Length: 190
Image (cartoon, rainbow, N blue to C red; front, side, top):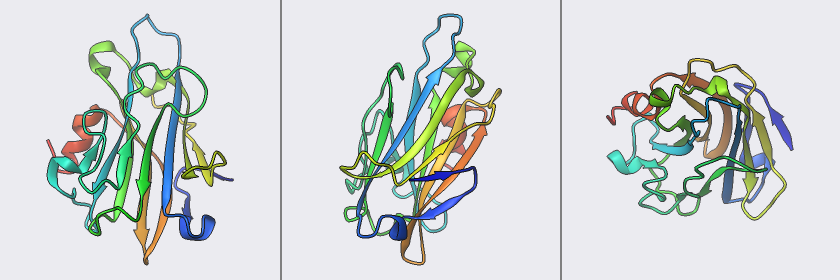
């Protein structure tokens, strides 16, 4: 397994030769708060080579739209508590089913109703994303987010993208305020 740091990248074609299906597992723990429940949500935004959403609003795979139209990107659904060990939510990518115009998949995790509940990623511990060949429990790579995101309500954990005909993964860790709405507005979807 390769331990990634913010900004590092790996070539999945080289690290997992022949693999065509990957599970992107994301996990987190929440600190003790005033008792309000935390609900973190993992989403995947499907982009073309020009960073434009593929298919308008159907470009987002999340708890209300569990699969991309091509069936190449599928969400495990919404884990409302994040309790327990291991992955809290997963996004599965099947490169053989992926629409040819999809060149990048951005993984973002947001806090549901963060502003209303007074929550941010500074209240989240042990956040990570790991890349597994589908069916394997042994990760190809893992990225542990270690920054203190004290004002951010959304964090881009990583990106799966195509370059020179090969699929790669980049560890991002880019946080911002405004949650999912701000993220989508940045891509012209709100």
